[in-house]
Length: 71
Image 1 (cartoon, rainbow, N blue to C red):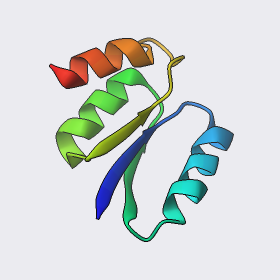
Image 2 (tube, rainbow, N blue to C red):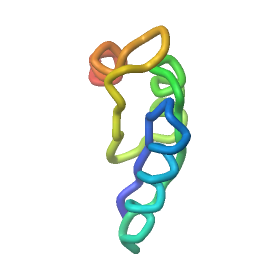
Image 3 (cartoon, rainbow, N blue to C red):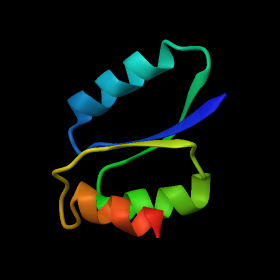
Image 4 (tube, rainbow, N blue to C red):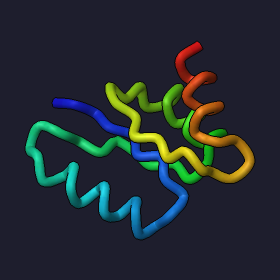
């Protein structure tokens, strides 16, 4: 099973990603986040295998959040 965290501030895009990824029985959506800060918190809490990261997010963009997560 591959645990995925979806980071997307657009609810429409977030739901679209959930539908697509959930169609694979080997993928489990473990959580969602709407900002870079929330993504960092969710990664610490949920320990996903994969994070889908939006680039343009409020306050902290996806590049900054990814850098913080990777550290």
